[in-house]
Structures are given as C-alpha cells and as structure tokens.
Length: 299
Image (cartoon, rainbow, N blue to C red):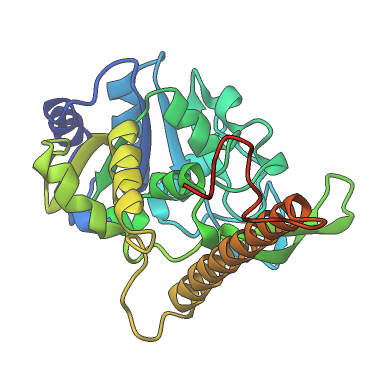
C-alpha cells in the first residue's frame, strides 16, 4: 500500500521542490494500491510544491461532442480528473485540450487558452514552457508528453493544419460550433527518450510499482526540435494503420513538392528575365567585326 508520505518522500528525492511549477502526466494504476486513491497523489504533489508552486494537468477530451467547461470530464486519467474536481482548480476553456491548474500561476497559464491553438503560442502549455516548468511522469512515457506538441508548434511542422468542428456550450446554454486545430498522433514521441537520456535530462525513482520521472519542459522541447531539424518526420509513429501519421507524411510530401515546384518556377522566371535583358541589349543591328579605330587590319 502506497501512502501519501511515501509519495512525498520519493518526489522530493526525484527533485520536485517547494515553489516548482509542474505538469503531471499520470497513471493511477501504475502505483499499485494507493491509500486514498487519486486524491492522495494530488495532495502529495501539492504539499511538495507548496503554496508558491503550480500543479498543472491535461484535462483533454479530444472530441467531446459538445464541450461543457464545467461538466465535461477529463479523459486523461483519474488523477487529472481529481485535479479538475478541486474547488480551487482553474480549468482553461479550450474545448478539446483544456489544462487544469492549481497554485500561483494557475490563472495566468489558463486564461485565454480558448483563443489560440491547443499547443500554440499563448496556450496553457506554451505559457508553462515559458515559466520553466518541470514535467513529472507518473507511470507514463513520452507518448503522453504533451509538451512535445508545443515543440511541433515552435518548429512549424507542415502537418499542423488540420481541424475539426467542435460544439461548445456557452454559459447561457447556447451551443456554438468552432473549427479547432487537431494535433497529430503522439505514439511516436518516445523518439526523444534517447537524446534526453544521453544528456542526463531525466531523473527517475520508483514509488510503489510506479516509475516516476522528472525532467524540464525546456529539455523536452529542445530535444524534440533537434530531432525535427534532422528529420521532419522524426516524431511520427510507424504503426501501419495510423491514419493520422499517414496523413501527416502526405502533408509533408505535398509541402516539399510545392516548394520544389516553386523553386522551378522561380528559376524559370529568372531565366526569362535574363533572356529579356539579353534581347534588349541586342536590339538593332550588331556588327561583330567593326574596327574600333585602333587596329590596322592590313598588318
């Protein structure tokens, strides 16, 4: 049986400290049995980071049908739903990828999220990156590490321009529909594990049966961007039936084809401009052997 004191002790050993801002990706069942369940895990984290810290969790719902800010539950695990249900929690209003936070930065990082793309500039996770947050994985891998989506936005990968139409229930009960950017697959995100390990960027301990890992958001984003610089498809998965990644590769190929075509057109236009300049210079009669007055052709 894992207790709150067990969790607190191991989190401090891991490097989580008073005043930290931390994004938590979690699997409650990875612990084995926890005394008090999900709320115990949340209490332990909050007590370790203290009143000056900030706890943030993804409270995503992806395609909720109709998103109700107050009622639509998180589908990213019991610990995230326990955070969402806290009276002092603040949930962002993004209709597919909301983030819920408790603590000093909660209001700042969640406000205005609905006005921007899920992970773009001004989103909750983008702001947390700017705040030098830490990322805590409790029994999860990088396939749930949403900060990597922020890296895709920073890198401007070609496969971001996908949308879905989502219903949003307004405070007065009216339902409106908006086209929302649809992030891609995350099943290839474990590609950043090796570069992070090589840099010693991940610390790890066991809490019961749970493997707990701590790293900085900056290290994650930097590692992901380096991979994308060398291979724009680096974060896509290789699962044969993954339609999302197949679509992403098609979008990359289309952009590359468009860029190649644009380069050909630009070269052709430059050649045409050069031809016209030559023709203009050669307008009228041209005598190639006209003496310039300095030569005597008889000698």
